Structure formats: structure tokens, C-alpha cells
Amino acid sequence: MPQKIRKAVFPAAGLGTRLLPATKAMPKEMLTLVDKPLIQYVVEEAAASGVESILIVTGRGKAAMEDHFDVSFELEQLLRERGKENLLKVARGVSEIARISYTRQREALGLGHAIYQGRDFVEDEPFAVMLADDIVDAERPALRQMIDVYEKYDAPVLGTMRVEGEAISRFGVIDAEEVEPGVYKIRDMVEKPKFEDAPSDLAIIGRYILTPDIFDEIERTKPGAGGEIQITDAMRKLLQKRPFYAMRLEGTRHDAGDKLGFLVATVEFALKRPDLAPQFAKYLRNLKLN
Ligand code: G1P
Image (tube, rainbow, N blue to C red; front, top):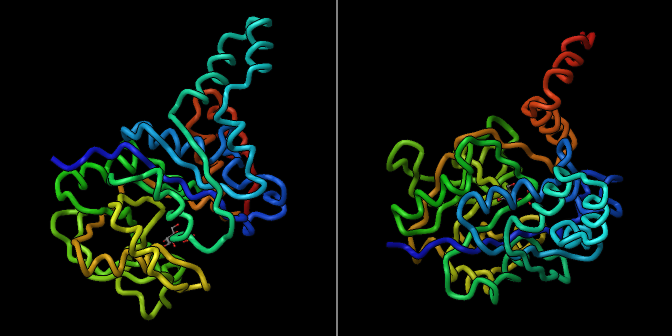
């Protein structure tokens, strides 16, 4: 039986430049879809998938995340005094979702480098990597879907989705053989290829199950696309030493780190909320759009 996935690393040191000016003084991971910060959706996905312990890799100006997942003593006291039991439960619940610790990536040297900051935390266990920009709306949590595949093949697993057209060049892309419906054995992978060079339409989205031998490969990885130390390049090297699998995730992925993606996700999530959906849908139906 493969080792249980108990730990997850959350790279969250990025500057969020695509969402400026919103992200000038606020971490992009704290932007909210309806009323919940992006990072909370992903922490909840991790917990629902069986993860017990999370390391958030932060950077300067990201302290709001730590406050968010901490106990807010004054707020709880006030809500208790005012008899607001439901809100008290909401506030308290956030600090109880998972055990979370933090470390800082002191320089923004790339996703591979951010993940490397988790080396001491991960020790010698297989672990998950989750990017808070990628919100996957799925019946069965995305990471849980991947853990099922990991448990069957006892190997690293990447979360992927089909991406049409030129947009593929914004992703890591795999070249792979389908071994069962929706599950692939990876032959090769490349970070942000040109459209004409992309080996397939299967894009890596921000969910990974990795093994601790990745850290030695990251250490040896030179800056790649965008001058950054890319996790895709480190995985590509490790692929010469051990099999890697990928799966096509079921669900809808929102790129919440992008203005349009963020807007779409906001509308979709609002329409799923029983307390908001009827009125919001009515408003949308009445919009006069050409
Ligand atoms: C990162 C990874 C890329 C992956 C993407 C998913 O890129 O490097 O392989 O496809 O996340 O969102 P970024 O979006 O940070 O440029």
C-alpha cells in the first residue's frame, strides 16, 4: 500500500501582477470568490482529500493569510457577546480546517524554488502541491481524484485538463499514453511550449502529487522558461528515473489569478449559493446584453 498523502505544500509567494492594482498590498490568495478567499477553497479541498498538514510558502506582504487561518480572539468574543452563533461558527471554523504552518520564499525564483522551500516540512513522504490560483470546482475534490490514481499506481500524479488552442502555451504540457480512461503514463513534458510545439492538449493545472526525490532534482535544475526554476523541468528530469502519471481531472477549473477567470468564477460560485442564487440569477436574466 502506498504511503498516505498527509502533507501539502501551497506555493503562495507570487506577486499576483495579473490582478493589479487589487494585489498591490493584498495577497492575491486572499481575494474572495463571493465571501471566501481563494486560498480557503483550496485548503478545504486539501482537507476534504485527507491532507492533515499544510505548509504555505509565503513572501513579503502576505501576512493576511496567516491572520485568516488563525483564531480571531476579539472577533469571536464580540460575536459571542452579541449572540451571533452562526457567524461565530464561520469565524472559528476557518481556523480549524487544517494544521497550517508557514515559511517564506525570500526571493521569487520560480515555482520549483517555491516548492523546494517545503523540503524540511515534507521530509521523506509523498506529498501534494496545490496552487491557490487554480480553483477546481468538482463534485469529488480534485486532489482526492488524484490520490485515487496515486494509490493505484504508487507513483507521482499530475492533475491535467484539456486546453483548446493557443492558450496551451500558458501551461506545462504533457506527452503521454492513456493507460485507462482519463489516466496517462507520461512520456515527456514541457513548460509553456509554443502552440505549434505543444506535444498534446493536456495542460498541467495546479495540482501535483510528488515524491521527496523531487527535491534533489529541483536543486540541480537551472532557470528555464521566464528565467525561473520550473517544477516542470525538475519533474522532467526525474521522469528519467521513475514513472510519472497524469489524470484528466473531472470538474471545472477556474484561473482565478486572471481578471476574466476571476469574474467567471465569481459568477459561477454565486450561482451555486442557495442564499444568493435566486436573486442573483434574476438580476443576470434581466441584464440587457447585446
Ligand atoms: C504554473 C506551472 C505550469 C502549470 C500552471 C498551472 O505556471 O509552471 O506548468 O501549467 O502553473 O496553473 P504559472 O501559471 O505559475 O505560470
